[in-house]
Image 1 (cartoon, rainbow, N blue to C red):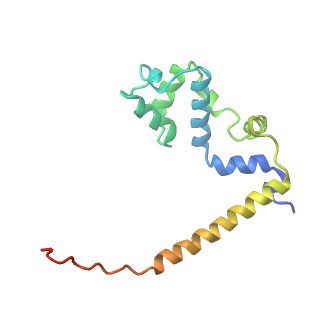
Image 2 (cartoon, rainbow, N blue to C red):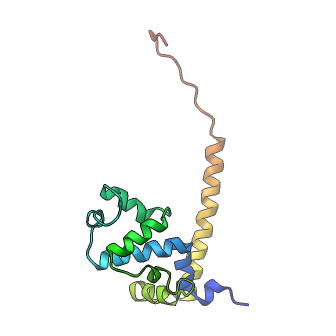
Image 3 (tube, one colour):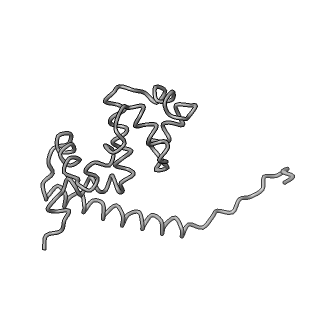
Length: 146
C-alpha cells in the first residue's frame, strides 16, 4: 500500500503546516482580511480588542472564542458558516497551495522526508552532546569579595 503522503504530497506538506481545524479557520480569516486589504488596526473597531497587537495574537494563537469569531465575521462581512465550509475537504486548500508553490513529485517528498529524518537524528545527537558537557568551574578573581 502506498503511503498517503506519497499519493498526496501537497496535502501532506499542508498537513505538516496546518495541523488542526482552528489553524485552517485562522488561515482563512487572515486570507480574507488581507484580501480586503485590512490591517490589524482596521479590525479594532469591530473586534473587541484595544490594540493591533491584541488582534494579531488572535490570528496567530489558537485561542479563538466564538464571540471573537462572530465579531471577525461581521468585520469582514462574511457569514460565520463560511469559515467552516469544506473544513474536512482539503481539495481547495491543496489547489491554492499548488497554484502558489507548484506540484511536488514523489521524489521531492521523499527528499524532504529524508531530510527531516536526518535533521531529527542530528538534533538528538546535539541534545546528547549538550547534556554531556560538564560546566567549567569558575575561578574567583583576586581581590574579589564575593
